[in-house]
Length: 155
Image (cartoon, rainbow, N blue to C red; front, side, top):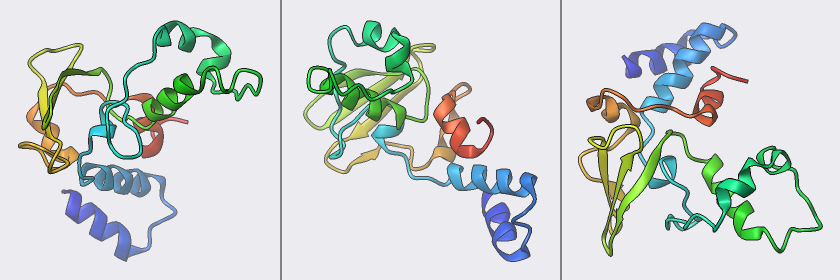
């Protein structure tokens, strides 16, 4: 299905039709290789970021949720802003670190402990799963608002 949609979209010249654009966005998304940063906040090198102390409280303030750049406190809250920026790059909702070892990271969802993914740090790849489409093995994995926006399903 995904190969057909991508091929059809690229050769038929229907780029102005919203439905085909959404189909193409979704098909392309399904073929994306998985990365740890799609699930949990990571730095530029792919290392897991530790959630800053009192981050939830800090993020709950309206001016911090909107990402307004406050020059006054920029150095004091730099760790919070870095974490928030990495968090916004995540595409899946409700994942957390269950285990962070030397060579393997195991993540689970907050809404279903049986959903578990293992990431091999040395190979920088998930074990058993290679792309977004392969996650259809699970009954419930949710896209967050950021992913829906990238797909064109939300503004």
